[in-house]
Every structure is written in structure tokens, then in C-alpha cells.
Image 1 (cartoon, rainbow, N blue to C red):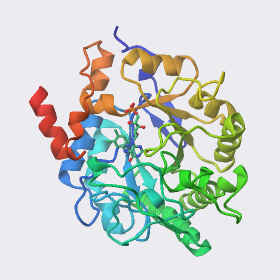
Image 2 (tube, helix red, strand yellow):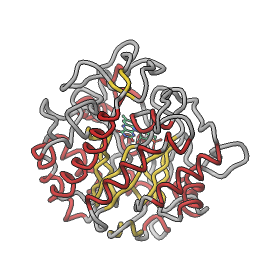
Image 3 (cartoon, rainbow, N blue to C red):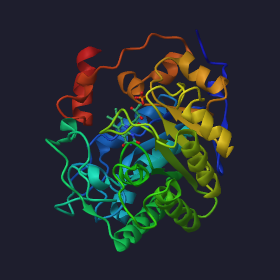
Length: 369
Ligand SMILES: Cc1cc2nc3c(=O)[nH]c(=O)nc-3n(C[C@H](O)[C@H](O)[C@H](O)COP(=O)(O)O)c2cc1C
């Protein structure tokens, strides 16, 4: 089936910008930056190829926000100084030709940090060792370290880091930022009762566990003004816990997505193993709940491989935009393939072996094509 004339290829407004279609690249950490956290020409080529293949929006991999406790991975790119921000400018200039927008994902690793050039220990909401094991394909090994509990001053520094990273992104020419509130990283550690045992205003009730989201979103919006996209990503699952569901279920969805709307964000990005599946027993999907409670544009991500699946998610009012991760890595021509009904290659985790960087992925793709 060709989807050339479907809604997938119609424009969609987010904030002050209009996307040329409903197809986005999901944020994917590829541990390929240089030692100073700068983006490389290899990375620019990788992102440029998604623009050339027709995606209307690219969300970058998670960029660390400060030189304190935010960095999570060796060779992760950062947005903690002006040189790091400027290293994205060649890509930004080349994207102008294709009309693809670039949003920087701002990420604080918190207790899930596996490597930090600036510190030899981790800090999170509470001194609770994260579940699971570090990820070998990002150079990790064994248990996560036991984090120190963040002080009030640490939390103020976290907020400052998100604000300054957003300002660096804006000055470098990005079209917006996405606050990474998902997948088990720092903000999600605050949201999750088992990693947040605090007894102060950041712990306990759901409204307290969401406080840091609100403070970051509001501070970033106040700093960047209205004409720069600010989005936020939420999930139930985590890189170190693929069973987790929000304990307050639908009440959590209501409070979370209302908070995003009240914090003047331009879009909500939800990720679930299957973007279209019920979020809770007998409920709509997380994306549909985000749309329902916020009225904002919603990006849905997770498990979308075929064009018809993407179309279904949009047609059934679950979301406005779909974000594609692994299927786009396995099929760098994914947009054209679904547009003209061409066959897709199945994703294979060999693409990330032994390290999930761009060099190994190119080698893998050369070997199978
Ligand atoms: C190698 C890899 C790196 C990822 N890095 C990030 C990241 O930096 N930030 C983020 O929010 N999600 C990250 N994710 C999650 C993806 O954005 C996406 O949610 C996940 O791959 C599911 O979507 P898919 O089924 O389309 O692949 C990553 C996923 C993969 C496979």
C-alpha cells in the first residue's frame, strides 16, 4: 500500500513551527561524540541522512545539560557549553535545505549515569541503588552505583542546567528542546516512588514527585520565550525496568498531562512498548490520554514499524505525529519505503554490537546490504 496521499504526509503545527509531515526520528543515544562532548562529522552525516530521507522532525539523542551530575554515558554529546552547542551548527545549516526541524533532547542521567567525565559518583532523588544492570552496549558493566541523595542546592543546579542548555540550543539555531522526563532518567526517578523516598516537597504525593518537571518546564519556557519549541517526554517503562506502570494509573495521566499543558509546553511525547496499546486496564493509550487531558499536539512512539501502523495511530486520534526509532535505523530510507509501499528490513540488535555507536551500525548495514 502506498501512503503518499495519506495524513502522514500532511503538515502539523507545533508551537511557532509547522512540520512538513507527521514523521519524526525518535531520540536515540549513539555514544559517538568526541571526548569534549562535541558532535562529530560522522554524527552530522547520520542525522542528515534522516532529513534527506524525508523525516519532518528529528529529535536528537539525549544531550547532557551541565558539568555536574547529568552526563550518563561515555561519548555522549552535551549541551553544557557554547562549543558543544556550536558543534551542531553545520548540521542545522544543512537541514535548512530539506525543511526538517531539529529538536535537542535535554537529558539528566541522575542515578542511571554509567560514566561522567565531570564526577566520580552519581546523585539522584534518594540514595537507592537503581534496579537492573548497566548497559554493556554503552560501555557499562555490573550494578549501577549507589547514588547520593540530591540536596536542595543540587536540585536548583539541575534546573539551572536545563535552562542554560535550552538557551545554548536556542542560540545555536535548534528549533526547540525536549525535556527528557522518561525512561528512568533523573526526572522519571523523581516521579517513581521506589527511586524517590524523599520526605521534602519533592517526595511523597504525586504532585510533589512531579514538582521538578513543573519547575524545569516553567523555567525553560520563561527563558526561551514563546517562539522556541518546548516539549516533554513521558513513559511508564524505564531502560532499567520494563515492567513499571504508573501506580496512580489514570490519575497520574491526568495530573501529568495537565501539568504539561499548564507549563506552556508545545507538545507531549509519549513512549510505550506499543504506542497504540492501552496504558492501563481498559484505558486508551498513553498518547491518547496525553491528547485528551492536554489538548496539545502529541508525538507517539514505540513499536511502530510499518507505515499502516503509523497511519492507524494518527487516524484513530491517538496522536498527531509518530516517532520512529529502530525501524528507521534498520531502514535509513524508511520514509520513502512506506510512502511507496516498498519492503522493509527487520531490525536486528546486531546493529548495536558490541557498542551501539555509529561506526558499528555502518559496518552492520554495509554487511547486510
Ligand atoms: C539505541 C537506542 C538509544 C536510545 N536513546 C534514547 C535517548 O537518548 N532518549 C530517549 O528519550 N529515548 C531513547 N531511546 C528510546 C527510543 O527513543 C524509543 O523510545 C525506542 O527505541 C522505542 O521506539 P521504537 O520501537 O520505534 O524503536 C533509545 C532507543 C535505542 C534503541
